[in-house]
Image (tube, rainbow, N blue to C red; front, side):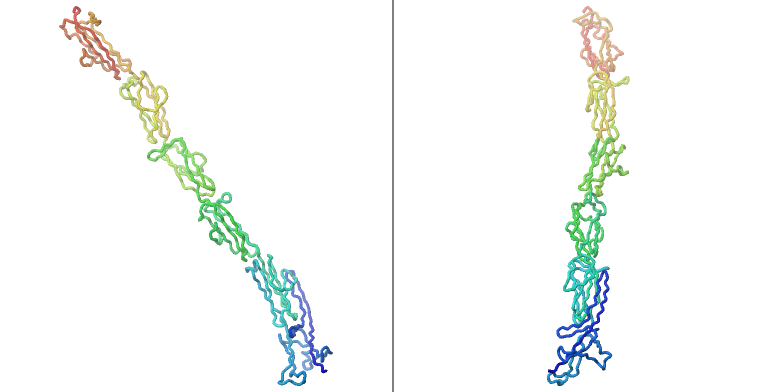
Length: 582
């Protein structure tokens, strides 16, 4: 049996391994350069030398195949072409007939030279990415290594994560820990070509940013704020950094934070500020909430006028120098901080105690307002008054009859006594008087019935209780009429019926005395004749009457005396005139 010629290729591999490890990244080890047979194809690492041997039978003795013509390049030989190479015999011979096949064709041995390393690509997926000075990934990060080799094919992919030790990569891997990573990788093919080390440094950021608020401006008790108050939001993120911060009030639409923001457009009352931050890889902070009270309502300030006051029909409020004003304020939430006041446009003061008005007659004004503990200022209010610090004045007027003599005013019990008062500001409230210290009483027209000296005290109080200094008026009440007396010019000459008889030439002298004011007039009437004025310088002459009568005639003389106050007395004088022998 004829032995067939078989050609064997023995590939001699010369391998040198150089390893340089670092603390941060692994090094690519040297892989054995080798021959790889797969699916009938023979692959050889391109840099390996080729030595040819043949045998005439399977398993038989092997013989070196050398070349004389190209001995310089054939022992060993190196393949020059990446990929498929051919070893040829010019004409193919039929294995049975041992004759050249017709039509003629070459005998070709395929040998694949592979001198190129695989190319591996890295793909990240499943997580947001952010690039700045470094690359950041968020949650759900996976990576996939895909390697390609154009000839012998990829034998293995190797990967190392934060390690100097390689692991065989088989499928998509998760990176679910936070931190800074160095991913290193390479692949080698089936004939020992290894690609250069590749690596990617990146950061996995799984933590949400943090935010907090601060209050800029007026705040009371930590949660009560003023309309002018603003919020500041501070945010931080230790890895990828804050991308945006959102805020809203009470479920309103969200706003992107760009700096301090106010609350002036909100209504007075309870509110909630919501805010949160999102970092550059979409880690989202849990929403923060801050409850606060926006106090937009200023205090309500009121005043109370204390003491003397009187509001006239013209709307003016009159006060005295004893009058004060009290101020008080209430506030719906933050509480009253201060009450302020100023009088007549002068210096402004903090209110601490009751306010007195200037002791100057005329109009005065107290302006007042208040702030609460978040500086809401109430509208100005005013207390407008008129200072009445002038006492009223009272006069006394005696009616008729009256008589003044010897520094004494004489009146009688029928004399009306009137008091009158004037007050040009708040007006008269009351007039009081007393007689001889018997106690003050409210004035109405009066008279004094009792005889003698009397002292009248009187005073007036105006409508703001200014009381006039007590005044006194003295008078003498004379209710006693004059005492009438008479004298005859001659002694009686007889009696008749218990009356005296006087001669017909008798004269009567009349007179009257008054102890205090004196007699004003004496009137007389004879026998019911009309009264006639009697002159004290004259006498009442009876002698000419009925001179020639022989009989006694009865006379009745009525005398009326009046003093200077009109006190009147009467006296009847009865007698007879005639001859003693009648």
